[in-house]
Length: 188
Image 1: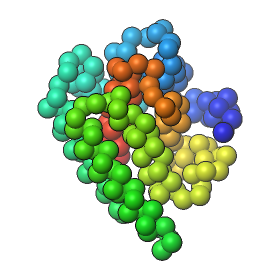
Image 2: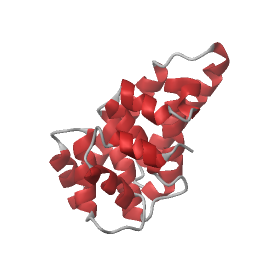
Image 3: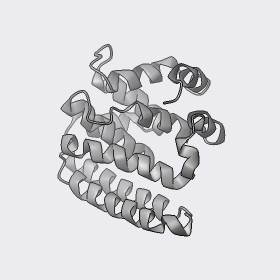
Image 4: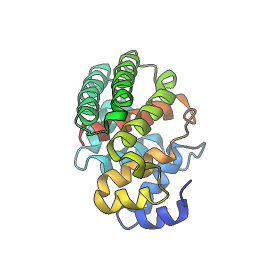
């Protein structure tokens, strides 16, 4: 595991401390910020200028139409990202498997069972990052690497790394965690 203190120091060159605080509240039992404030703070970093719409559509209200559109956009963009990624001939079957997993994940997401999809979502995200960056994604300095070559993606990578692998702190935090991840990748 990477040195989180060093990575947090580095990420603070790109975002305010309140963003790291929001990451931590979302991924723990911490309740020092409201879920609405957490979602707004993270959405603002992931897609500047439209954080209010995110909070309005996904936190204040249960807007199935907006969620469905987000899932469709996420599905389309994530598949495109994976499909356009060049891999060694030996890894083509792995790429095909990941594309299949993306389809399965999005089918489950359309059922709005975010707790049931959480672990699969996190796993697929890590698999897609590995497809995109290959063995570099497993290196100790990957967080620094992503921040230097693409700060937006580096911030997302820090977010993704902080997500509990086996489930969110609560059903609502799991839902917001997934929606924020989809929100970033739908606009990446």
